[in-house]
Image (tube, rainbow, N blue to C red; front, side, top):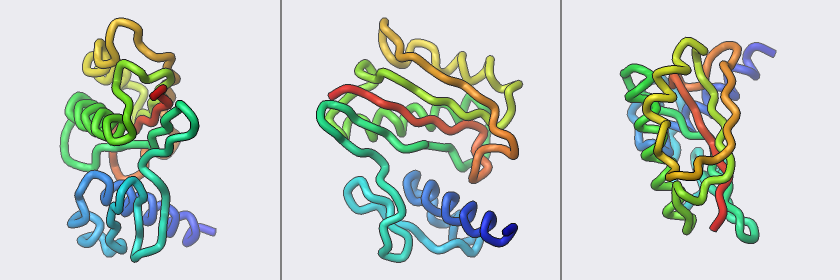
Length: 151
């Protein structure tokens, strides 16, 4: 059972590393490299998940983490910038985000995350859920976010 959890965790780390262009981290950790083709994340040429999906007039952005050294503010900045990139690829924008889910490694980072988050979605911010994740966010990120947006 523990090996299965480790395997899933390694795949998640590799997938997120592939999204953010940090395959070197995955390789150094002995995790199979991932590649991005369009909006689909691949692990050794097998689809793992999509970085975004468009359905009707809705855009669903997969969880984005920051897998580099830094504090909660730098991680939040990286995540929000990557979210904006993914939204633009999907044909949307930060101003059209309807819902954000925020997963914190440590609830004590709530204030710092909010300082960077505030004002990033225009004058009519999305609804948001913020939770601290038991066991931490995969891949040593201090924060992970996903969102739902309109086209």
